[in-house]
Image 1 (cartoon, one colour):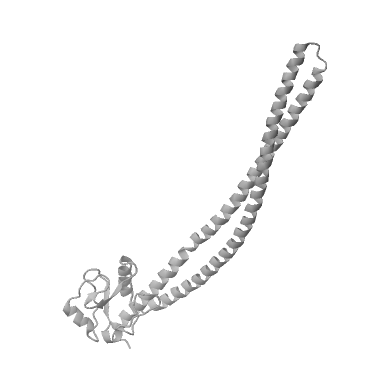
Image 2 (cartoon, rainbow, N blue to C red; image 1 turned 30 degrees about the vertical axis):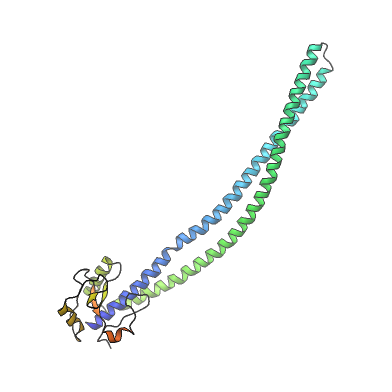
Length: 259
């Protein structure tokens, strides 16, 4: 039984490593999405600045056309003024000239505003394009690092899976099923050490006769915690100082009696 318990402890440690590697691998899609989001945000800033720049140019051309059209009207009204015969007609044309000149001033003011805006959008486009270039350069490096790390972890995962397959080949099928059912119920921890006559997983005290039997060398009985149902094992105090914790990463506790 001591040999079987040791194999289950080794399996539990290996399963903890597998969970850790799988958890790390599960973070890579989010990491890549964050990188792409930053790049997309910088690209959107460039696109937005360019769209605003194009709109400003369109508005500027519109106001340039307005200025020319009102100037053309002024020229036409002045030409007509020279040909009218009555004072009333002359005054009417002069009023049209004043109105057109007022509109010219308004259009020129709007044109000036668009020219100032165009300069600002030109500056913004250049700044956003520079930022995009920097972000894309960082993103390329980040993608390469993420893919490299993912490749390393995938290799580690494959090695751990192969190691697990080799390990479980020596565990009886019914015992393996038993272990996996308990592990599934308790977040991967199917075995718990007994310390101070208590289950270290849930704190439940172990019955005295059970504890004595667990300490007996050559015992072939498997014990379970009466509360959490985990498989129990015990490490003698004199050897516990040199025995790492059984549920940690890359550690394997030694069960008494194993050579």
